[in-house]
Image (cartoon, rainbow, N blue to C red; front, side):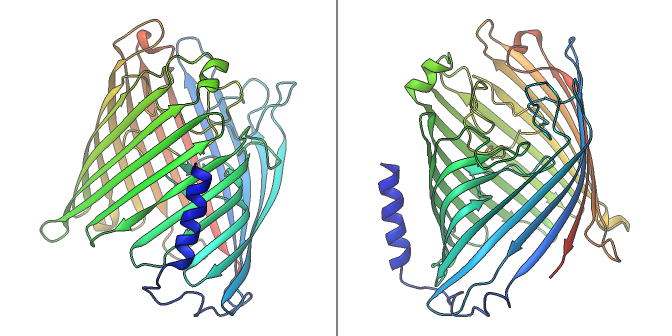
Length: 428
């Protein structure tokens, strides 16, 4: 059914009455609008696990090159997007690599992580008016299919995606992807995905209010729906209150439940965050709640074979209480208190600090009920504002996660440190 819906929306997209100036009519050409960018990334992650679990750490250097051509002139513009990725392992050999949550370099059969990895991808794109159809290797960022770029190298997917912005404030997306490239492995089909269909869109109703609605169907795994509503209340000068609601509903396929020894097939999870910003300060209060009968809680991302994961992208969790822990266990309820500080006001532009405390309770596992977990998250980030190193960013992040004995089947206690240095270079 979702295939048919995608076909119908594609027809609707191309027949929409143009309400904005046409991007294609303003095309300067294939070469003239081209860009080549390189991101140099040095990344380190360390997880000091508790309760007798072995510590894990990985360190690597990556180069991420992305090329985006312009579109040829005419009614139908044609272009190409391409990327080339390379990563060199600096640490994290046998015994220290292999943590599912780090996953810089996939382990081989010997248990050793790869010394390096490289891959390349490309997509051809066509534009009519303000609608683009792309086919090939892509990095989609949608609430129901969102590639993970929070580790050393990003994930990518192979397939077709239509993006339409024919009406001001309205974006429509429809796509089908048939292969997933794991961030820690070479090849286009290293993620175990058979296929995923995605459909949805977002609309900016007013300057303050925006809403989104999306759905996906991962073949032989699950169906998922997502809804978002975001409203910004302007208050006094330099003050605002933002309310952000996000919700997912997932329904696992019966075959997937049987093959993976899963209990239950349904989950609903939502979060509501209120952020008050005043000058350099922001204060966040958020609540998140998971319900349903699936012992997986909210299932997303990862590499599905043998891991109870679904293959829809490691960032497909647009929820407030997602840090090291996602606070997405069966029946879990969690609260967050957060604070952010922008040091620009104090004479240090580019420096920001964020801290959050999240506590979850009511966790259900196969052996217990009423489990708890809590996390303290801290992050400093500095972005160079000028000179030869302009836009270079240094991010230092830490989390302290403690999980009760009743919740040990769902999660594990530990201390995490991440250090990321990103240096973006615009070649042209």
